[in-house]
Amino acid sequence: MKNKSLESLIFSAEFEQGVQEAVRKAVAEADAAGLRPAYEPAFSRLRELERKGKLAQEEVLEARRLARAEKAQRDQANLEFHQAVVELLYQPGQPGAWIKRKALETVQKWEDGQLCNPRYIVAWRQWLDMPYEYAKAAILREDDVGLSMRCNSPFFFLHSQEPEQEK
Image (cartoon, rainbow, N blue to C red):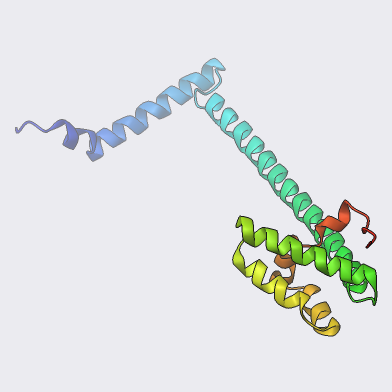
């Protein structure tokens, strides 16, 4: 009889049958003795981790939902702010001229200091030079371009200051 290699012995059908029989016998003896199966703590821990994972996943999804809702509120407030700015910007007289001048100064600071992507500088200059209806349509766009432009707005100085009186 030839000697079998360890690998061929371990993966043989006879060895597999022997292992299965040994496991059945051990389970039967453990059940007869009233012992908890050896694999149960591992399964309990696995179930606990799965439950925590589901909770963690639900918590992540809830946090994401809340973040999206908060961003939608900020975006809506930003849109409303810009609606008011557009109305002020194109009123005749000092307020509109002052807002436009300050916005253009802000855009110039961005350019001089290389503080933002040049596309915002170019677009805001173009928008500020447009007639009312075109500027209003551009500034209040409700697509991704409008949203990103309003997030990079030269009008945020209005949040912190009152208009200066011309001398």
